[in-house]
Image (cartoon, rainbow over all chains, first blue to last red):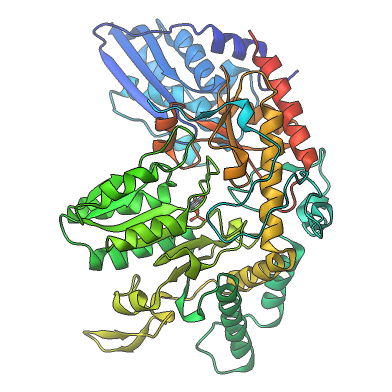
Length: 133
Length: 443
Ligand SMILES: Cc1ncc(COP(=O)(O)O)c(C=O)c1O
């Protein structure tokens, strides 16, 4: 019925994968989207240059939470180098969307920002790709 | 945690007596559309060209609290200025510069008359935010001393909170807050105690809340505040656009307004200030136009109001604002207020029928044309996105009032807001869209 609220987005929103926290994480990154109050926290365990485990928690709209769920699922077990190389387009592909308006884009990319910050070992990560738009 | 939720019973379709400002009598039992004799929102709507612009779906604009649409008269006035007499003001002595200056100052006079002020007390700024920063910086930076207190409310827009926080951090001032009642109104019983120790030197608060719609009793608060020696600042961003504002009757010392919410263009706002205060306090920004004499090491200030208008001002925008004020006066502010309030009442009654919708704020007869709500289990952003698919524009988020949402115990809300061109059909479209939302997100 609605092109944005596809079944798999709503499914990830209602039944998030990789949801939760990690007891003693190697990295914990929190970020928020001041536009709509989306909040994300991601806990990571790293092993041999890979994301051994990732868990997210937080609150927000379906796009922000589904993106987090999809992205966490996608990066678990992957080399950190791959995570560093993730782009906006990768997130859109995971969501199955061609484009997103600049406002909703912020919701979708919150998870990407959070994941990248962890991969680079930074407190926050700025999406230069987005700035350039 | 304080929860401000309204039972559906509060959402009567009545238009009660207006609160706070000197608004005219709202007709009792008025219907939403044509309850105000002599005021026809359909005819009004025809004056706003954005609604006639062809698009795949009709535009259902329910975000006037964020910014209003502009009538043709405003667009024409601005375009006429640019096409006939664009020149810098107060400088050139040639013909079109004189004309431009006259138009700019005429806009100031019109605005002054609109709020019952003297033109000398009308300072043009960029918006309300700048007007409030001007007060905090220029007046507050000059008048307040370490240990003084600033009294605010939890329902402030960030623009009447952050400037005071910045000043407080710099000058070791204390921030105090008038608590809210369960219905989202100010608990005035707490006022005497908050003011008792005499340290509160300024009380700054919003006239009409941009989230709850609450109409605060300005005159009453101002009277008590002044009895305790405090200066009174009123954020009239949401009220000036919708009700008759008489700055003298309000009893305030400073009042901030913003043009783009009152059918005027963006880029211009107004600070009204009591003349003695504007005379006594130092300027805000330094530069051209605000000076009388300048030497290499010091300057003296221009007279009011130009002392506060540094640099080339927003001339076309002032002209547009002047036209907006004239247009609003032609509608009659008491009609605009009655219309907005009646629509809000209709909206609240209809929303109460949608499962999972929770209304925020006081009953309709104590608010302006703003209705904020949440939908159980659905994030406001998702609500707004589904509504957008139906051509319905509502605001979702914290509406620049994060602390208020913290108090309400919700991260964000959806807000529908009305102006003179809003129609009952707009509410119908909102309700239809909300039924789709609940269906889509039902488990
Ligand atoms: C109550 C209130 N105060 C202040 C403002 C700020 O207005 P502006 O952004 O035009 O400065 C707004 C607008 O969002 C408002 O609703």
